[in-house]
Length: 203
Image (cartoon, rainbow, N blue to C red; front, side):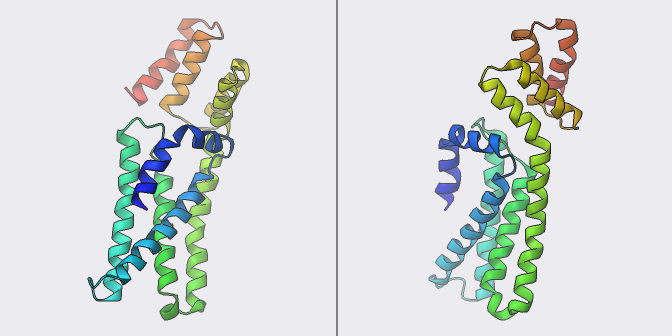
């Protein structure tokens, strides 16, 4: 589980980026399902272990371990330049997945009357971060796709729509500055504020 989570997405960053660019927000349900599965893998592995003896402690240890993995995964994305981006929405989806795993293994004690509503309730934040990510990134991602296809004018238009929607990032400002200077022949004086904003957000 840990090797798969840390190594495979990093190795496949370029391939996966094409999917995430076309379907912004899809990574959040993937995170959610990965951590439901991850929690269950760790929990059932602990069931075969003599320690800890108490089932609640096994659940707590499995939840704590998988949450630590989630935090470590986002930390490596923030600290290392590996083609992936750390996002708080990922942690929301990861945590919801872990909690759903807890509900699943405690469903006999809780009863379906409580287990099903709890699972549905935990899906709400996952749906929320998925929708927000899609709304934030749809124009920015489309701009990157146009830029890859060397349609720089359409890329610039989508980047501007991203800015107009309220989305901000150093990468977005830098992309606009780069396109304007390198490919669209803009006046450097008009481009400088974009470059300066990019530098201010991420020196």
